[in-house]
Length: 198
Length: 114
Image 1 (cartoon, rainbow over the protein chains, first blue to last red):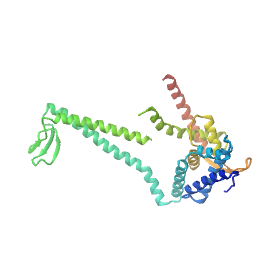
Image 2: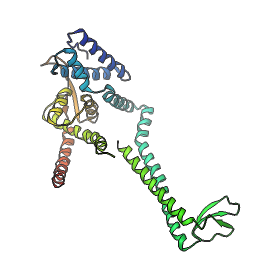
Image 3: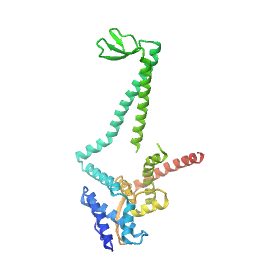
Image 4: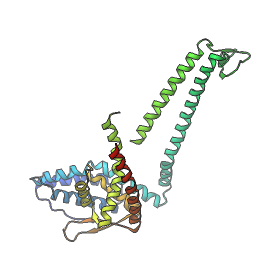
């Protein structure tokens, strides 16, 4: 569909065709019929909006109308992406279907990974905190290293052929570190939740 | 986090859902076109919205089968793309209205008590 909008002054014509050029450029990824449809709808809106504007000059009315529409990227990007995605999926385009499936599962996978990471972090923090408390009453609770000093393990009982790591300071270190990591995990989780809602 | 930052985060989500509801309400009254819908939203509500952002919403409603479109040029001479609500749109709107009525009265009660 084509239509010649009635613009009088030369400056207004320049502003109008500049905006039209921008639309043409941004709508390029779309098939011609969709491109013309959207362009005509936006231009029709612009024309009517400018016609009802109270500014003295035609160019100011057009500028005001463009301003009220907002940044073209703000409305054209989601529009184009929605149309292309829907069209490609409808055509049975494997890449589009894969992209669509990926998009829907991406969030679930991310949530699953974050749940596992945070869940593991919280569990370890809580276990170490409990061990720190238990160590006060049972000195065998702590971190044990094998004879060569390499392998590190958490244990609630005495380990033969192993050396306990810093038994005199374990409670202090365990309680402080586990509290700190619990606090850090909570802050990180809160920040992630906030950013995901934006 | 400052109250203004919280509002900046909360408002787009609140607005998006509300705009779809308002558009369907408007189209239930009569068929309409982008500029008219945008003007009505501006006049009837205090929602500040870049007019262009209505088009992705209208396109989504069309894709979901809640509205249909038709170009018309009579009356004014300039082409207008009219949106008309479908049966599925009316059904969806009825459900939205029910949710809105229930939620609105509870929220209003809480607002009055706070």
